[in-house]
Image (tube, rainbow, N blue to C red; front, side, top):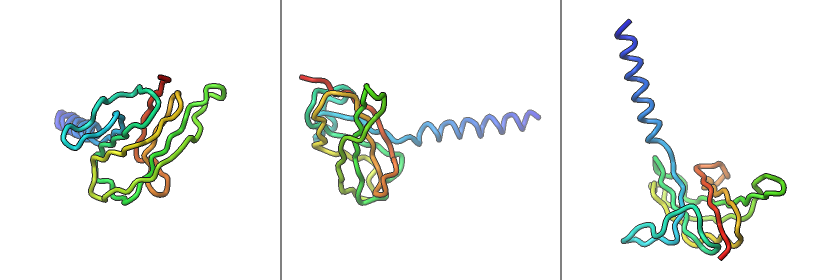
Length: 131
């Protein structure tokens, strides 16, 4: 019985460790500099152009992806399609930045990175405030 419990605990901890390491991350910054990396990261910005950064647990595989913005409509209490941008990628990339994504209006946005068939790879939320 003791061996079964120990085996179960080992399997549990290995699975928990692998699960924690397997998440994809989408986040935002004002701009990306090849030498300095992300500049002014956050999840709350003034309206304008931002850089969307994605860190994946495995290479992207695709040569094109879509960054889609859905804006929250507080009257209806739902996110609605707002805009999208298509970008070229290399199949072996696992750290990617997408410049000049326009957040023109204040509000809460749900931002998706989609594969070419529009399946979600990862997503995140951002708040845009008026200047």
